[in-house]
Structure formats: C-alpha cells, structure tokens
Length: 169
Image (spheres, rainbow, N blue to C red):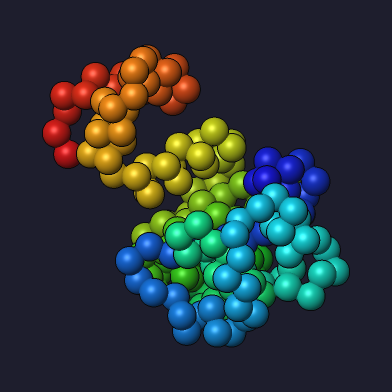
C-alpha cells in the first residue's frame, strides 16, 4: 500500500510499535484494534477522512489506533522543507523504540525514522526489507528457512541476500 500512497502522493504516517508500549499516544486518536488491510489503510489516509492527518499505530498484526498525535522532533537536522508529518515521525522515534514510516503528501517520497534518525528517498523493496529485519530476528528467519525445502534459494533470490544458514547473531 505504501507504493500506492507514494505514487498518488497520499500523505501517511505509520508507526510500528516495538518493545515500548505506545498506549499514551494511541489514546490521543481513535482505537480501532483492526486487522491491517489495504482497504483499511486507504480509508484512513484518504484525504478528507477524519483520521487522515494523524498517525496510525501498528501493534503486532493490527492497526491499534488511528488519528494519533505524536511528539514533534525539535531536531535542527530536519530540513525546513519537511513538515509536521516528518517531525512527528522522527519525534516518536526519539521518545520510543518505535519505527515510523512516512509518505510525503507533497512529493510522494517515502521516508523511515528509527532511533531518532530519518532516512529519505526509500523504495518499497527497501522498506519491506527493513521492516522484515526489524520484526524478524536473523535467528528466527534462519530457523524458518531451514524448515522449508528449497527456502534458502528462494529467500536469497527474493531478498538479494546470501544467506547460508551458518552466520551467528
């Protein structure tokens, strides 16, 4: 869905909860506790929809809340061309271990914030790989790959990785 948001220049701010519980931020929005679907994300971020200006918080496999207000970063490193959506995405990562995915409404540029750092001009393949890296430890991936016949070669082809199943974490 991020690719569609980018090409349509639909602004989006998606926060992925990790170890730090984001309950206080979720309570600033509307609790949905709904499974993630393309239709749900499109409805939330549709311009003019009641929740489109705030962030959504993803917890596990669900959109926990939408229309959430996040703390804004005061970082001077953020360029003046970046607005509130980017400052909020960066701000939540300065205040928690969350990861924020940001799509610019003006340019369609995809950015990701983690550990108080913002990376811009990402493509969807890079975003998918980063999210997989965040959510699945190398050890978990290795174990799952080793249990599936021919999975190693399929994984290597899909990710451009050279996984051989021997590296240590």
